[in-house]
Image (cartoon, rainbow, N blue to C red):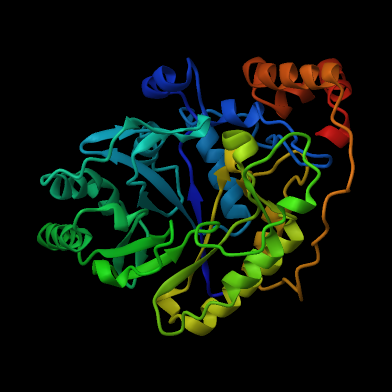
Length: 412
């Protein structure tokens, strides 16, 4: 059994909120983006569609219980929930508040303050701000007071006996060192103990020590430098995004030496944010269960060598970032293969030696015929509304057969 604790980042975007209704259309959730994706080249795996858990709604307690049971079964030790707080305004908080009030949600957890302004970058209008992170003078104290109930919860994750908080973009804060001092002082005065503050290594930032933080955490694909494969991909239409090889990015990440720095390693199962960015997407070829298993195995092995027992954490990005093509949750192509790989690593049963998958897409390929593409889009739009996924289809075999006919295997 590995001595490393595996922490999966968790996105709470899978339920409608009034703000998203106003910005993106009535009923918008992450599934809206997921189901509108289409392949950009022959063999391109899009869209990613859920399997066992279906198109869930996180307002339902039963959905979260299913997630927790599945995560624990396959070796995930805790969730790290993204927390959206903007000068006292919270977004996407309903699943977290319900988790806090629900003793049957028996999963350790921590918070990652997603402290970036929201813009319309998903549809190309990066400069249009939807909600701004203002960093008012009173916000430091207001924020730590807001999350105090989470820090006090007995399920909250501790590192070396201290509650563990991640800040997504410390470099965006006007004075991150002062904020950390306010938070630590408040926690000490309130009997919470000394707070462990961790900064994510994103957008080129690779130095959290300058902010007075206790540690850093990798957040790939941020800060990943690897060769670009755009010229090797036969795109159907002009493409302005970036294409990398999963294995090469993972090798470069593993080459970093953290023996003298307190930085927690992170791996991702796959990455392809076509649902959000379309022709401007960032994608990694060959994000397969076998490649993921090797990266996770090596990240855990290095963590055991670099970190003392109480600090052996490895993060996985992510449990359910479906619109980023980045999820441990079962999908209709791989089933539970990513979870099974996770469990083998967690149990010390993995025997990987290298990254086995490095192939490039075929040099030529036909775009799906128009009517097939139209049928696919209609089917994907209807499925969440009709019954939230595969479980509903399994109870209606004639509809399932029709959907299978509309979406041939080579285009799914």
